[in-house]
Length: 153
Image (cartoon, rainbow, N blue to C red; front, side, top):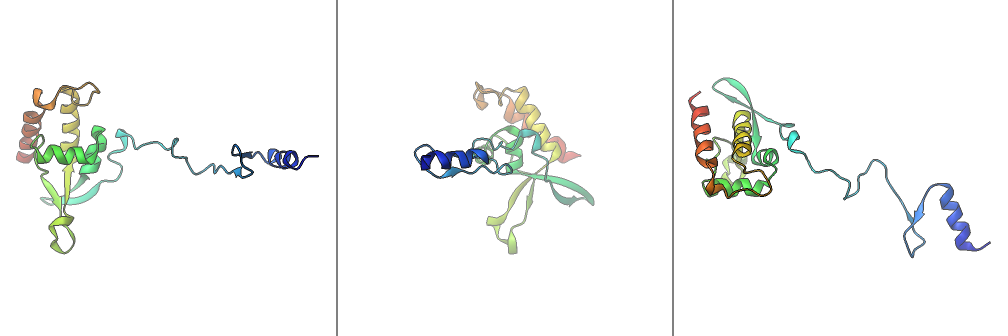
């Protein structure tokens, strides 16, 4: 019997395969997803890990710019750019950095703000793949109005 054939039979018995052109078996780990099968976080999971804070004596859940971006199906850098360019208002809440360092601040949004921004974005067509430019929508004034209404409550 040929050596290659006997090795193939050995590994076939335990369900392993070889890489093409090599004698190294493919080792598949059932509990470890591969790069291609690992699912990206879905927009539905944006509120899985809120940060807790107290506003006017009431415990409130807050969400980071990354969580807002996830809810919108965008990158966090896009949301930061929108804030920098005035497409959305600056975040109402911030967490302080370590030892008062301004570089450690985190933008925080309330659940009402995140849900309102997502709803407005959907209604204005900002989230569709062939979207209109944001400047051609009422997205910005509606989000500004939302933030003002929420601040008055």
